[in-house]
Image 1 (tube, rainbow, N blue to C red):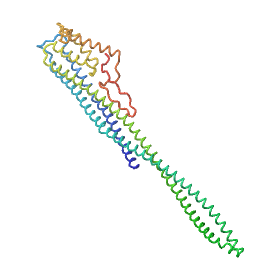
Image 2: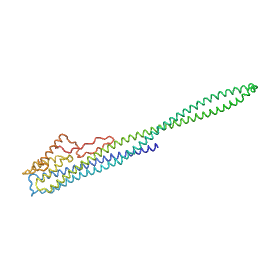
Image 3: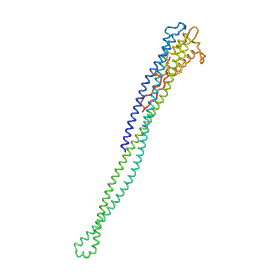
Image 4: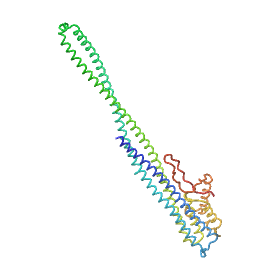
Length: 405
């Protein structure tokens, strides 16, 4: 039974190692994939902003709707295509994180959850066997004590019989010697013949009693040795079971730590999934604005589309933000047409002027950056920590991607 438990524990140890290795490989691979996808997303969004900037420079100054620049159709197509590519990049990030979430869930529930249930079952069985062994060891100690008492009684009886045998032998030898020296005395001691025979019988009985006592003493000693050996084996087995139980408890502790690491990765996946979906939503809006620009006829229409793209981008820190956004707004503000079409742009939501709104938000972003400079990392999403789950480092925070201006 103990060998069977040893085999079970060894199997669970190997299985746990496989689960740990699978998790580490999965998380490490996920970090590499996310870095690649995030880099692609940053590149695509930067290209989309560059295409938007090209349109802003193309409509510089007065713009004649009848005589548009020859490169206008190409510029609009490139801007629409660039924002569409950014949208697809965000969608790929979201899809990949969803797949990662499924793999983590399978490892957590089907793999680690099943392993922990089996480990708990084995630990319960080991606990029951350990209690039974302790009870059996106690019973053996009681039996051993009884046998020792029996041995002491046998040895005492043997000693008494040996004393009686010696005494009776001495009397018999004295009677024999007297009869040999004085034959007539034999007639006088004739009545003692029956006493002599009785003594002889007593001596024979005493000898048999001594032999029996000796055999009992030897048997008792043998039983004592057997029970001492059995008790020792039980104690060794109890110690071994205790070690197995301790090992199982230690594995449960490691399992709990690994489960915590997996759950933390699941939380990271949930957050990043929402980040990617938000990025996908924003780039979708930017694509819509770019598509609307293709049907614009005058400077104010093109400028409104560009300002709306920047406005959407400023709603969140997910889109990479650098000098290109500032250059776009500066270009529109400093190279308006004679009718101030860009400055006079108003919407129902922003009657104060769309350009002024965007300029204010840019200023707020720049002030925020000055107060809290972003980290050196240029990825727009937080990546999972791929340190050992056995000594987890804190997860890197979501990096604000608004660059310094």
